[in-house]
Length: 171
Image (cartoon, rainbow, N blue to C red; front, side, top):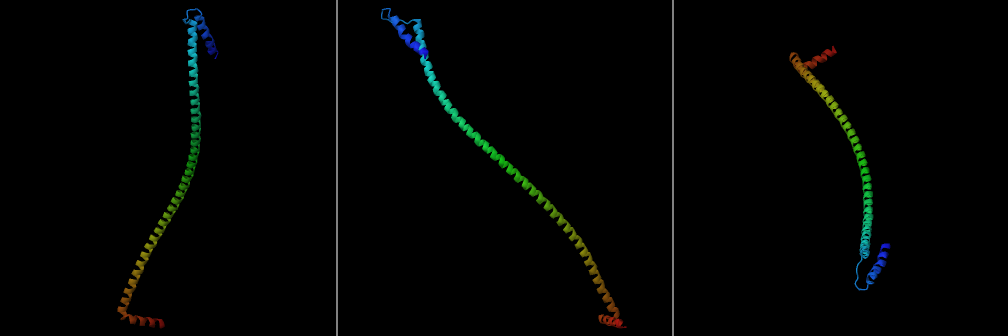
């Protein structure tokens, strides 16, 4: 501002001083040239300042917008992370519950398989015992029938055996 005022005041004075020589031609002195260049520099600085101010305002607006967007994204991401952590914890608890249920079911199945094997072994022993007893009974019945046939042949028939049995009971 001071430079602008100095250029504004010195410029006409230098020109008038040069015109005071009386020939009507304007001659430029070195000081006048410096003042002229300072004026051009001042004009450029003013234009650059205006452009810089506009660029700064644009950057500030962009920064503010970007900052808000970034803060929003950070907030959403933080919330999402917390939600995902919570979901992971729920999933972990669910898996633990299912693992426990699986272990319980596996234990129950093993117990049921053991009971089935024990029952099958008992049934097999009972079947062997039954087959053995049936074979003995069948053999005894067969022997009894043959004995009856032999006795019937020696005593003269089955009726004679019945008659002889009642005589021996009575006498």
